[in-house]
Length: 415
Image 1: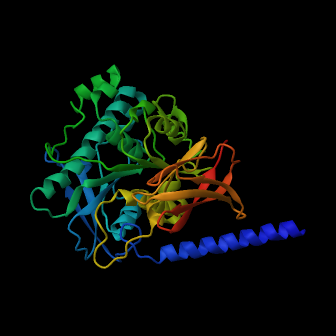
Image 2 (image 1 turned 30 degrees about the vertical axis):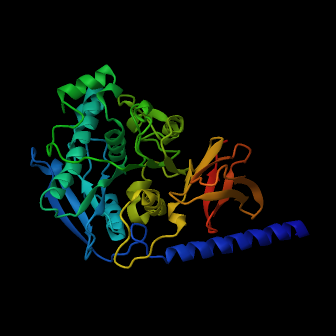
């Protein structure tokens, strides 16, 4: 090995050591909403609709056992199953909700109306109606907690901190529930189906008049019917997707890989739209994993990584302060780098309310690649051009005006 190679190798080992030390320090923080600070979770099942009383309108509510917080964030998990199968008690639902309840959320696995499988697979109108009915049911479930907050306050929910998402069909439902907020966004065909089924975007599943605020969304192998549904001012989104997904395509293709089913557009086509309209997002793009990786639940490392990334993504949006002697997190958990992975010419680095002085990008050998200084003294967000960087993994180091330096990974790919 030549001298230069030895130096690079030493730098790389040193960088990995520093990275591990940082990761271990962060892992020891025991921060509410990031770490599993509760050891036990209690689960109850309720009917959430005041119109329907059936299995389609049941939800399982996961609460951290022994929690005394009085205004907790709510997270909904919507199961998959192609809108004609699935249930709130599948293993991914259980594991996902348990993870978040142990972090301090009230997590809910929600059922919704399902279509007849044969009719669904043969009729595009039934497919569209199924998505609309799921929207109505999810909104009713959210309003259930708004109603509770105005009455018995059994669940102690902050109705301004509601996060929704799911897997496959559940992710499709969540994206449309959050982002389709006006009939004017729909074409005439979908608007007609809406009028003849759930009537309005508020839906027909009850709890009318109560809060239904959605703070942000997450999507595990989800997609949109029209990417135009994402528009300026829409909620931030975290999306996990495998490039080789043959059921809900990473780009655009008929769902279920079936030409009789409507074409949906996945993460690969949604992100350019989000760049255009300025909606904040983060992604976890897998090269392999197909459609089934979220269904592996805790037995799959990508599922476990997704849980951690989603918790990190949502944390800066929480206004409730950690309580009960739990430590406040470092700025690491408030740092946002997006898009990440990136295939565009620039990334945005933001850090909640902290003031950034500079952003440095290193390769994984520890070599400094570029430095971007803040243009003004009070910037909390910096745009960094990465157009000349080849596809690889990098380390982004952010220096704050107060003197603290924190870092995170950045993946450049498909350029």
